[in-house]
Length: 111
Image 1 (cartoon, rainbow, N blue to C red):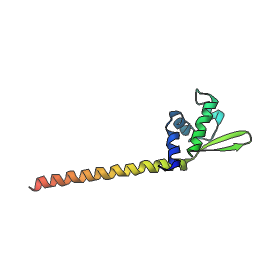
Image 2 (image 1 turned 45 degrees about the vertical axis):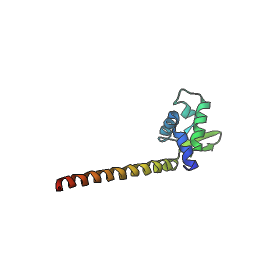
Image 3 (image 1 turned 60 degrees about the vertical axis):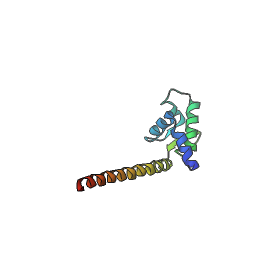
Image 4 (image 1 turned 180 degrees about the vertical axis):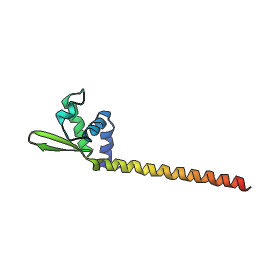
């Protein structure tokens, strides 16, 4: 698994970080604005944001002394691509099973 994908999965493993991503999907937020959404310390929120940034799921930019956090949809693309591979894998397997059942059914009717 590529390192960037590993970081994304690490970031997504925590429910608080997943909720932060949902919140950032509606608007860019400062650390303080993110912290207001949770009953955890600002320091804990900063650690969650750091892990999300390391996973390339958010970006952080400075605006004066304020740090603005923004969702990075392209960071999620590698995760979606990984899941799509397995979605296609199961589609192929299920189609093969369906075809085998249909062949078996035709063979029974032709005998």
